[in-house]
Structure formats: structure tokens, C-alpha cells
Image (tube, rainbow, N blue to C red):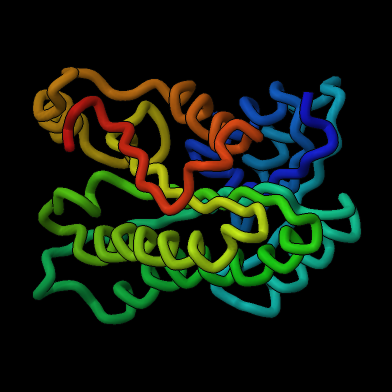
Length: 245
């Protein structure tokens, strides 16, 4: 059990967030669960944690606004005593071919998918450095590596996480903190279900394994990265995509 360690899960109310919350809870981690708009869905997730021998609490914040992120980090430190693991799981996608992409939409995706993770990392790292131990995980996408028509903003921001992570990893490795990216293919969760069924079928056919991923495998990968046994893996991009890239 890991009741002495606290995870800050950004985007806990998202499709994948539900799987991550349950997996981390069952592994015994205390949970600081971030959300912004989906309060009803998050309350359902919180209800599912009743009876587990862990501490958990929800925190509302717009991760694109630095003051809100700073307050959230301070509140979690006050409530839990610290933050050991940060999982940057929030993300949005607004799709259009590049020459039709509205600048406002581009900036919105950039703010949530790249600026948000940067701000969360910025304000959590000092808390981790105090303890001399930490794990930072960024959730990225195979789209950043392969490119998909109509996803210029989404792909660019997810690719940007790789550069952010590699830099962060070098800045804090001497503090006992690792930083890694998990680059996901198409899993049975989250944004996949926003895609029309005929397009989903085409995507599945393009995957060498010919099936979508099981979110449980994402949880297992994260649990490894959160463990003491992963201290020598940092600055890496871990690909979970059924052979797609």
C-alpha cells in the first residue's frame, strides 16, 4: 500500500481520469483530484472511492490561470502534507484543417494542453523538492508523433509536452524527481468516443494489433512510473499504441 504518497491527478473527471482514479486508489495512493467543469461526473467518481482506506479530496481549478493553479497546489500541500506524484491528464481537442483553424481555438488548445501542464509542474515541483522525491507524468498522444489531418493544435501541444518533459527531467533529476511522457494510441476511453463510429472503425483497422487499448494497461504503466523501482527512467517517451508508431 502507498498511503504515505499523494497523487495530484489533473483532469480526474475525464474519460481516462476515471480509470486512473480507480487504479491509483486500489493501489493505495491518496488522491487530490482536479476538475474544472465536470463536477457531477467527479462526484460520481468520488462516490466510487467510498470504503477504500485512502484519503481523497476534489479541487476545482482552471489550469490555464496561474493563480488558481498556485492556490490548488498550496491547498493540497496543506491538506495532505505534500504532493509526491503529478499526473498531467487534462486535454482538449478542437479540430480543423490548418488553414481553417481559428486562432482563438488554437490558443485555447495551447492553454489547456501545454500551458496548463507547465503551470501545474511549476507549482508542484517546489513541493516535491522539499521531500527529495517526486514523479511527474505527462499524458501525450500518438497523434503528436504521426500527425493526423485536422489536429494541428492538438498534435502540436502534445508534441510540446515531450520537449517540456525532457527539459524538466534534467532540471530535477538530482532532487530525486523523475519526469516522463506516456504517449497513448487509441484506448477505450475519453476522446475516442467523440469520433463517429465509421471513423473509429477506420482507426482500428490502421492499428497493427487491430484493436483499441485497454485503459488498465495505462494504469499499470503509471503505477510502475510512480514506484520506487522507476528511479532510473526519466526524460522518456513511453509508447502505448498497439504498434501504430
